[in-house]
Length: 441
Image 1 (cartoon, rainbow, N blue to C red):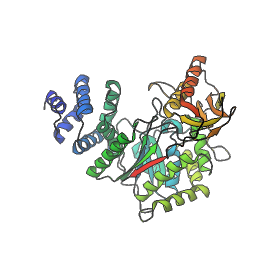
Image 2 (image 1 turned 45 degrees about the vertical axis):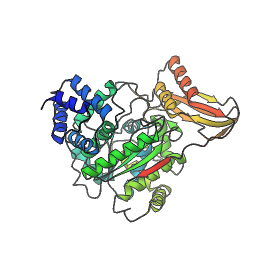
Image 3 (image 1 turned 30 degrees about the vertical axis):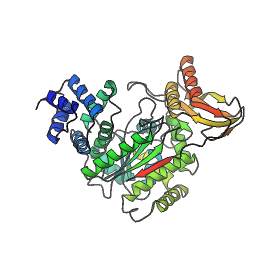
């Protein structure tokens, strides 16, 4: 085949065959195609799109560009979960112990954060000794040990996607919905899941800024799952403002502990319970139950302490250290830098997730580029969110760094500027969006 002809064909809006797509993915995997042709192809897809069959063929080709995890030795239905990312998204560390407490095996392959979105791997690595490096050959052993596993995606998992994602990042082709859908689903399929539940976040603090594009992404991933023989359910959640009150690695894990102890913000719990119910519906545990019944059952796992106990089991099984009260020992302690107070009475009408996420990164909690080192103790605590009433002098937010961090005054000033942009106080009350916008399956 001729790559130039493939580029021209897609440029003109034609539909590519399975063999043509495989030719392209093979060229990416084996590095036989020059970057300029790969870039041209990605740009053609951005402008002309792909239909569902093309997107599925592209997904499966990328999934099979490396190893496919074989989880068949692990008994039960393996349900994987993925989020398209957001600010303060701490769902996975709460979700895994809940699902595992029902005896459902959980194998979760997660990623690191980049830019304003936090990564699940980074959050778990804020725990002293916790290792996210787990060889696929050891998956069964970990499941037998504690019923769940949290690992990073290995280099041989969908390597074509890994290369193409890096190319999309520097060629302005990240917003393409077929490319986003195939990137997410290729890793999920390569991870060996029997069924997939996706959290598609929507709002200023997500990659999908509006509900229309979020719905199209959800539809695409469900279509891929259908054609690939993998049942998919999508939870659409709001990222108008950060999820929960804490943004930053240790800070968010402290909030995880609170929620698993029966405390913590209700917005996080609402997303967790919705995701948990959707995951359980794919298993024998929940296939004959309605969503409300499953949510109540999940709440009971929290209130009786079983989910918190499972959280401790997960930490210990992957080398993490627990304190005498069963809570994690963290690698860094958050140190309060500054608290900002409301300058007038009113109601919080804006708490922009993107601005808060970027402020957290400036404090050291995230990476502006992949090589950056994270300050695990850094981040932001939100004392007030959209709809809350405030009086002059009330705490709005607090900035943190790790107790051993060295941060310049300029970075703190930049973070403060971002937080000032994030907040607005109005004379009349504005209610936030509901956390769950829709569930599509």
